[in-house]
Length: 329
Ligand code: DAH
Image 1 (spheres, protein in one colour):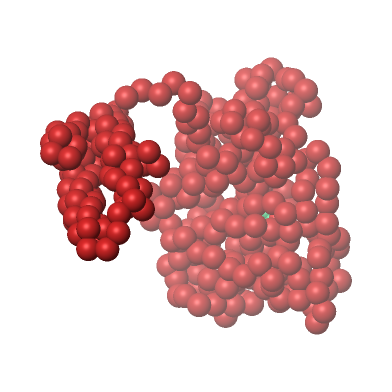
Image 2: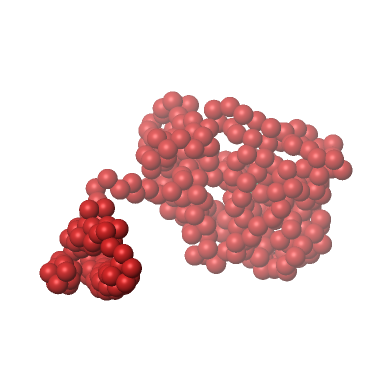
């Protein structure tokens, strides 16, 4: 018995400890076998022997449990030492990604305008007719409403077809000067290679007292923005029409794929249309009760910019959550 206790005390690890326990208390263990000798004894002798055996067993177990805790603590310490990780080690198979191209592009646009002091605004996705159309100079009978295939609810409520209603909401809740951008989802009933029923736009609006916000400011800002987004591209303003701006323009950049020489993506024109803009129409200011102010606005599709910067040709792949596509960015 003495040797067993000595062995216990000198055990080096849990495994050795366990084998000593089995040697003592296992089915054929030394102590277990001693217990079976009890059946050959009787009376006082049996009682004394049983008592002695129980003491020995208890003594063994006390030392065993204390030793077990000691060894476990030591082993845990040793394994923590050994398994220490070095977070600076290079792991070549880790996927580093820019995130989803839509969020990446949206964040880049926001970064640019916020550095110029634009405020980030949001508006509801379920809009009313006034904010989405009427206040933007698109009355009920206006043909431009046909361009926007709208998801309608009851009572002239609808899913906003563009982010322009946030212009109206911002002007209603603030006073000039205003300098805001609004990124967010928009909805139209459309689905093909270049259209999805849900897509994203970024709206921009600048309003100042008197004549401070001019078309020249707008032109400078957008040209600089497009160079920030696309690098060394040419930018051109093409006269266009939007009911809420006068004059209005569409903005093109020289094709990022063929450098303006003409290719399939730019339909051999050398130019890619990237956004719409203009000087805020007097009618819009009237709708929100503004007087003696000037302003300009612009709107762009985030998917369109993401397709051009990330070189994606099927818009739908942005929304199919296929990791093989997303891992490429
Ligand atoms: N709302 C327009 C659209 O969805 C985009 C747009 C064009 C917004 C010109 C503007 C703007 O603020 O000035 O097609």
